Image (tube, rainbow, N blue to C red; front, side, top):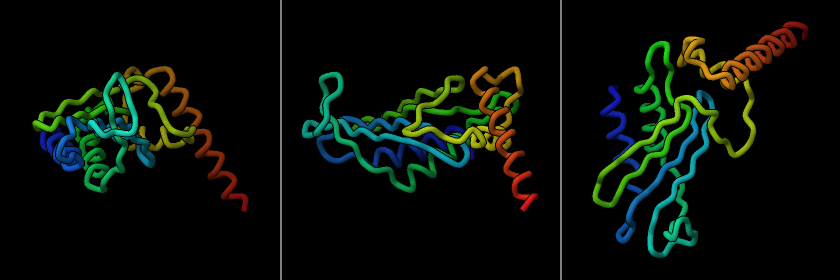
Length: 157
């Protein structure tokens, strides 16, 4: 799937979360191979939370939205450069969609994740070492060491 089609699929899935009176939906997402963390805010006059003077409600993700996000991340992969770690997608009630991608900063998680997940992500979406930020190099090295240690423990049993 190409990047444009994948983005449109994600936009449609996010748009389907809007109801009458809602102004927009924001999907903040951290995603690597094997795990993800997301928050979806639907801005609505009746929202129970407030940010920047606007009311919003949080809603649960749909399978379609999660699948679309994974497909978009894969479609955004560039050989040697990798793909994004986190993003914020916004869809308005008028149907316009925007995205802000994070390719270089360590993503935010709701809980610490195992460094081996970064090593697995590197296997799926390889980045040249020159395209790896220092924090990522460290996570990949830690993750590879964890994977080797786990294999060694398994062999000894």
